[in-house]
Length: 157
Image (tube, rainbow, N blue to C red; front, side, top):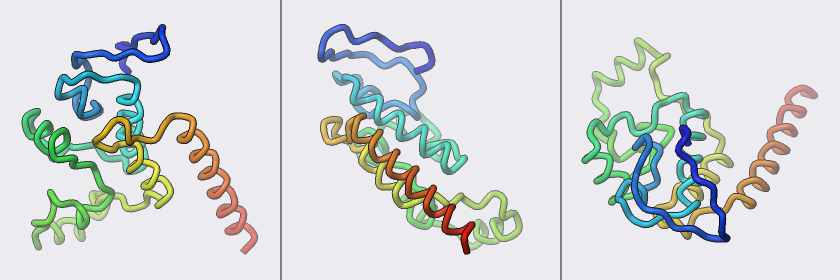
C-alpha cells in the first residue's frame, strides 16, 4: 500500500479517490468509483503475477488513458504468455527471431495453473465477485501442500 493505507474502524467502509501506482490499482479505484477492501485483493493479485512472472504488469500500456481503457473498462488482465494475450496477437516474425536470439527476454511461462486460477479469481472486474481473503489463504495453503508433494515426488524418483 506504499504507506497510504487506512484503518477500517467499522465492519464496512467505502472510500473514494485514487492515490497510488496505477498498474496495481483496482479498476474501481482508478475510475474514481466508490471502493472498499475488495480493491486490495485485486492489487495483491497483480503483485503476485509480477512476482511469478518477473515482469512488470501492464508494461505494454504506455499511457494512463490506455490503462483505463484496457484494464478498467475492457477488463484486460496480464497473462503469462504473449501468444495468449490479445494485445500481442500481432507477434511478428522479427519479434520471434529476437526471442530466439535472446531467450532470456522471452516471457516467463512457468506460472502454475493453480496460481493462475487463484489470480483470475482475485482480479475480476466486479469487486464483489472477487475471491475473499479467507478463501485465498486456504487456497494458498493447498497450493503449498501440492507443491511440497510434487517436490517430494521428484526427490523420490
